Image (cartoon, rainbow, N blue to C red; front, side, top):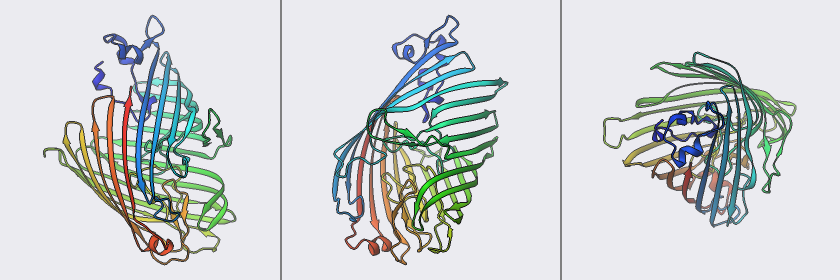
Length: 440
C-alpha cells in the first residue's frame, strides 16, 4: 500500500490500514499496522492529532458586554487505538484533551476538556458479503450526516462532539442506511468528569442512495427530546421530529447541494411547525490554472411568527456544524435568511485561497438571534429591523505535507440595523485565527 495514497479521514475510525500488511516495515507503518497474529488478521493501529490555534478577536459580542480585544490560545490533543479481531469484531478507543488559555471570560463549552474519552466502541459485523455489510456499533462514538446541517462532529471548534449509544449501519455500493439511538453529554473541564444524559435524546434513520454519474439522494428522520429548551418564545420541554431530504453532487464541473426539512412536535403545551430550505450551486473550473471554484448558497430557516400564540415556528438545527457560517460564527442556523457567495483558488502547491461574503437577515422580526449551536443568543427586544449584518471572510490553507497543515483566516463583521437597534453601544466585529495541525 502506498502510504501517500492513504489520507486522514474526518472520522479517524473510518481509516483502513489493513493494506500495510505486506508493505515495507518503516517506523510509521509499524505503528499504523501492528500484527498480533501470524495471519495478520488480528492487528492494532495507532494514531493521533495535535492542533494549536491562536485567536485574536475584537468585539466578539458586537460590544454588548464590552469585552473589547481578546487574545487566546486553544490546544487540542487526540490519541487513538484501533484493534481488529479478524474481519467481524473491532474495538476503537480515542482520548482527547482540549485546553484554553487567555480568554477574558474563560473557556466556552466548546473550548476546554482537560482529559476525556472521545470514542470508545465495539463493532460487530454479523453480515458481510459481496460488498454489502451490516454493522452493529455500541458505545461512545462520533457521528456525522450529510453536509453537517443537523448532525455534525464539529471539527472546527476545539472540542468535537460525541454521543453514547447504539447504531446499526447497512452499507452497499449504492445504498447506505444508518439507524441509531443516542444520548448526548454534558462537558465539564476536568479529568474524566463528563456526564451523559443516560437517557436517549437523539434518535433517527439516515439513508443515502448514489446514482452513478448523476448525483446522490439522502432521506432522513431525526427525533430529539430536550428539557428546558430555550427559544425567544420561552423555556419549556421540547419533543421535536424532523423529516428531510437532500439531493447533491460533488466533484469537478457543475456541483450542487439542495436540502429541505420540516419539523413538528411539542414545545411545552404548544405545537411545533418549522422548516428550512437550502440551495447551493457552484462550478469547479478544472481546466483553468489553479482550478478556481465559484459557489453561491442561500438558506431560509424559519423563525417564530408570533410570540405567545401557543405555537413555535423556530427551526431547531439540532447539532449543527460549528463553522457553517464563518470562521468564528456569531450568527447561527435558526430564524435566518442568508446569501453566501464564495470563491476559492489553488494558489500553489498545497495552498488554497478562499474569499466569502455572508449577508444575514432574521427570517421573522418576532424572533431573536441564535448562535452557531442553535441556542438563543439575543432576544428580538421588540425590534422590527431584520438585517443582522454582513460577514467578510478570507482564509489561506496550506497542506504542507501529508501530516502537517496550516490555516489562517480573517473575518470582519459589519453590524446591520437589527444589531444597531438592540445594542446601543454596538461595534463591528473583527477576528483573526491561525491554526497549525499535525496528524499521524
